[in-house]
Length: 290
Image (cartoon, rainbow, N blue to C red; front, side, top):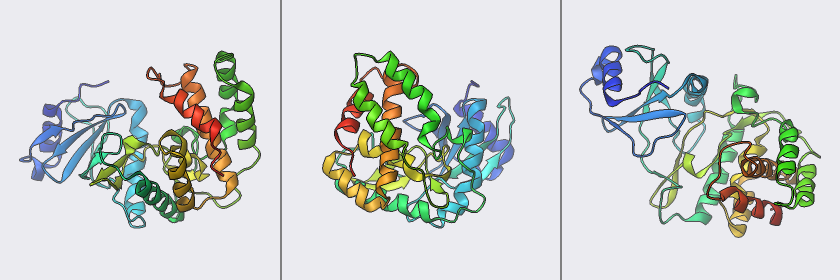
């Protein structure tokens, strides 16, 4: 990974966008892994991919978000400028509007019922946005938006590794239920990574949605996973009503949540030293939502 520092950002801005050269540059408090983000003055941010594998996702956001923003009632990180590789930094990068708020993950005083309703409304708006030339689900979205069966081999491998640790029969029943349907309508926009780290809140309420690097056009069921990995039972019901998707989409969404929990617990994906996904699996097996 390139060494992405305040001095590098200052150099890139001064060379390519001299009108902003006098603005202070400082790193944001909570950095992601895929990209490094810096405040540029009070109203802008600079977003730089941390490795080559993340470049395409940032470019996709730069291409798609301007068109999507006009159809959404909540702010999304629209680009205002795109920079080129320079000063030893090898990738394209972008300047975006600063969106105030804390992530839901870091916020206190979240009204969880209101969040469930507002997030469901947002995903409904996203689903209704014109598809245009949006990218079809596939490798770029880590197959979010595709049918969950794309990860069938991984689910089976995870269950083999977790033999005696999880209720394999119950897991297989949930997974089989997820595979009995497919999205029957025209493909729609999906976010692909609806998680508490990608939702911003102000005064306890949802105020913006960020990180569309996994977005695309396909089956929106993948965006339902937060029902099990964040919301509690009554909140899930509010979310389900607001998001307005049929029962079969919820069965596929439950399958997506099951897959993620199993592969993390089995060491086939991101490590889970705090046991978060084991707790998610309990919710997945206990509550079908539908």
